[in-house]
Every structure is written in structure tokens, then in C-alpha cells.
Length: 109
Image 1: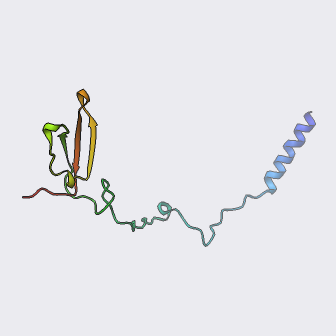
Image 2 (image 1 turned 60 degrees about the vertical axis):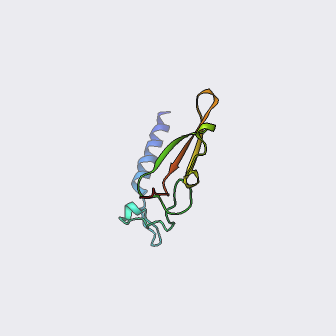
Image 3 (image 1 turned 45 degrees about the vertical axis):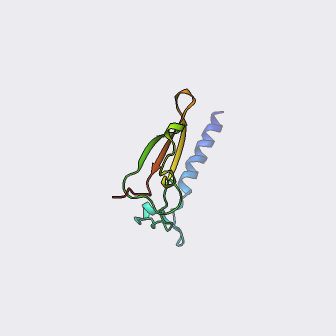
């Protein structure tokens, strides 16, 4: 048993002395990671779109949300056609409310 351990150790020592670890070579066509190369990533070629509607340019300025009553007494609700998004949520007593989000349309001055 001891002879086997000595033989294995001898092989490991001899192998370590004659075996040379190859150096890393960079292939001439290799592509480096942008951060490693110090380059900035290219600007996206896709134009920015409105995150609320998916159509048109991104809204500039404030986004306004208005909660509206959705009962017979609160109708007609004017200006809903200009809203980018309308959420309908259940309120108390089985009634519903609307939340109209405006980002693209601007108020008249």
C-alpha cells in the first residue's frame, strides 16, 4: 500500500515538472465584451414609443391620472377619448370607478 502511494506521488511530481500549461492566445477574430474593450454600446436604432399606448413618441411632461365616477349620476364622462389608458376598478357597494391616464394629450390654455 505504501509503495502504491509513493508511486502515485512520484508520477504526480514528474508530470508536474514536464507538463507545461499552455498560455492563453487571443484569436485574431475574437470579439471582446464591450466593458472589457472600453467601447460604448451602440445607440438603439428603435425609436422610443409611448409606454402607455405603444404608438407614437414617448410622452413629454407630466402624466395625469383622474378618477371618475362610473354611475348614472356621473355620466356623461367627457374627454375619455383623449385618455391613453382607462382602468375600471370595483369600488364599494358593487359600484365601479374609472381611472383615466393622460400623457399624450395636453390641456388647452
